[in-house]
Length: 158
Image (cartoon, rainbow, N blue to C red; front, side, top):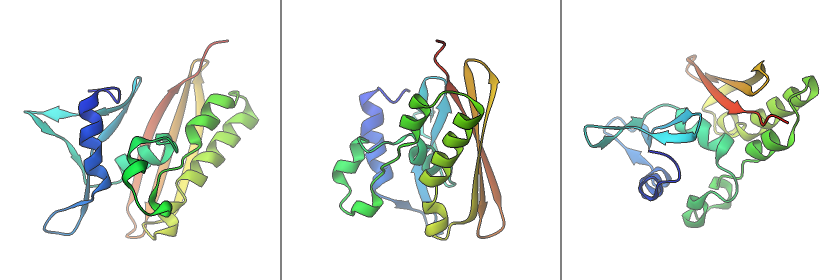
């Protein structure tokens, strides 16, 4: 199910309202990175959930200021205002460009450190092919766990 699907927009409203289970863990609808963008997985008619950071990392990088759920979030500080995707689109895949993209990723994920979820966030961008960027995000959580996320971005061929 792709981000363009209206059902996804309805489901994503749930991510704005935090769902807590009996252990008081935050749960989001799982958004998985694909070549076509964010995807929701449905298994046996149920939407897959994410009790980790994958959806938060994905939305922090690819949920720009025009993200539809910003219209129902009251606190300005909780709205998603990522410029990461804009930086990806505007930055050529050169050595300096990859550093610029990495800096944008770290800036957009800084909230993980500010909210004391993580002690460090690292973003490494590589160009394994002329038409593809690999973005590796490593989140070092307060509890000592390390989470890694690999995202792909198609580079327009000029």
